[in-house]
Image (cartoon, rainbow, N blue to C red; front, top):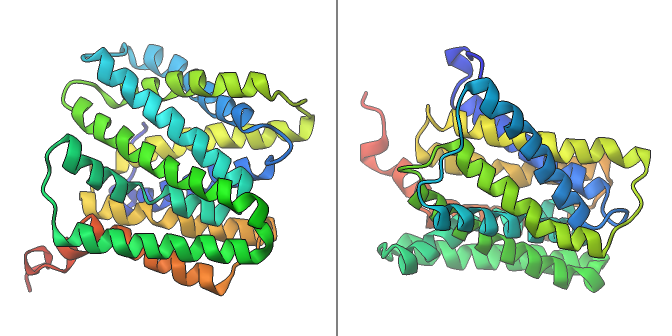
Length: 298
């Protein structure tokens, strides 16, 4: 990436990346019902592969796959997560769908207990309860808002996307020592495209001219968001990165309300705050920020 002024690194870039992830979700929502979920998924990952086809030659690097099995699993889990996330966007308003998907830090923490042998703590237990209650309030408000026929499938898809995202993060953590970020992104795009392709072929719908721009928006926004997020994380703590990640549902809700006329139910707002608070508390981000050791010395 080109040199970025120091004052704009870190938190400003994380906020920008969260906004771009929301733009991706918004663009996917604009073609909901007109294109199949498989087509939107394939568009996202195909554009990512085009970017990587330019990135590797321009940087003079080659993909590295130190552990092919884990490398493939990262892409399969990530591709599955995106597919179910886009199913949720197709069936729900963009705000609730993004909120459910953004519960992945809790899922990753739980999977870390069983897969990596990490310790259970009180923060995780209480955070999980809060997140569950908050997500339930959001789903209930969506059903009450008139989407009862489709919200059930969308809600389950959003929850499952969070679980698969957590699994993808676990494999990413295992790969991080011997695989560079671009190679991991290659797995994500390659296997994500393979995952979405059968669904696209099975439910192929005609592509009109007015759909091209939103599909480009889905792919380009996801690439920009991922690259800026990865770059910014080199200048901030994990806590700051986790907190910024929770801005994406807020941005998504705002874009949906402003440009798509999607309603914002008061109960959804309450549920969102509870859910995001549960994620931040359960993953230990808020406790670490509030601990005396994390406060700057006078």
